[in-house]
Length: 381
Figure (cartoon, rainbow, N blue to C red):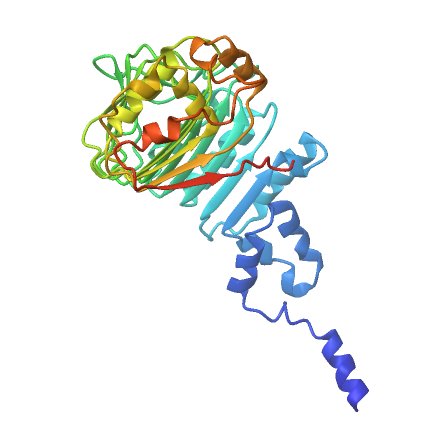
């Protein structure tokens, strides 16, 4: 009797006994290819995937683009159309058929998609304009690179009509002039809270204006963009600002009283003082922050300013925390600092990770602020 009970227990399928809503939630964590494959497990699973509220479609999960295209087409045809699509993540590295991309976007919009991620290489004209007026979208991640990958050449609409949008991540776009030499693409997003601008530029404008009364977090990444020279922040509720790359643009802050946390990881690619001076001006604009996190390279960029440590800093009086992320010098940066006069005294056989005296320079108005040194670690590929 004991052996029989043990055998029956071993054959028991506890996973399949879970409610549909739980099984579907589990399947949302895997890509669509593997989710569909569960149909062979048993009759219980045969049609379960057709009710998936989340689809992860990455061409890298398939051996050929032809098989990927065929899979996506059949998936959209067989999926239960009465089920709302809460989340769609579509990614294709390389060329894509315009008709397939249009079908995917139209399907997502017509099924009340909430979270949409699209990363493709094509002309933005191949994406239906309905994506920029979808009233159910709360999160949008969009990376549209033209064929041949011309840096920042994909034109972005002058304005958005996404009333429910909370989170927006844009990559490889060029913002267009809207009025008075200003590009202001986000002013109509009345609920926007998190904004990431990744390697984007501005065309025919002198100012990129980020205007939002609801924005709380702003992240910018830029390495080579010199197409505009001012970033104007009209964000009274902004709490966090993060920048990675080369500081080419001046920063103008209108009412940044809520800004508490700033993270800067700056690099430079020439011996020009333009970027170090611009970076210093950022500190003046972000005067009342409570938490500052900088990389060692950011401090190295600042230190290129002649006689920096003799300057009386008129900001950072409310600083409570200063974190420094330690990392080695890049080869290009090593060549740059060796050519700069201000580093000659600091050179022993090689530049130190953090220039002497610069931490005290930042803390001169907040001597009691907590200082943390964070070791740099490379992510494993």
